[in-house]
Image (cartoon, rainbow, N blue to C red; front, side, top):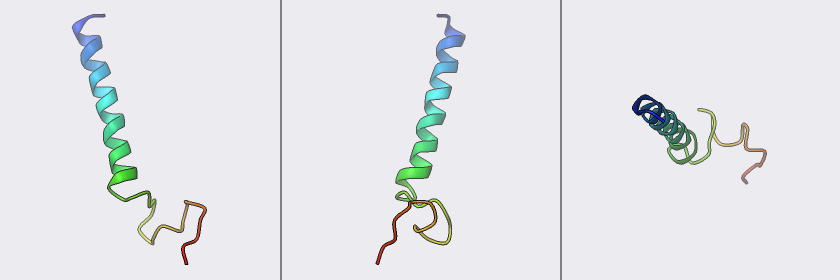
Length: 45
């Protein structure tokens, strides 16, 4: 593996971690602006 392969791998893994953070932890699993009942499959309350 060359240096360009390593840099590309770091960018891909970093992008995947950023997407996971944005979709799971930052929104706490909510997928929409209208609340958490849209795509999670469970209804609270």
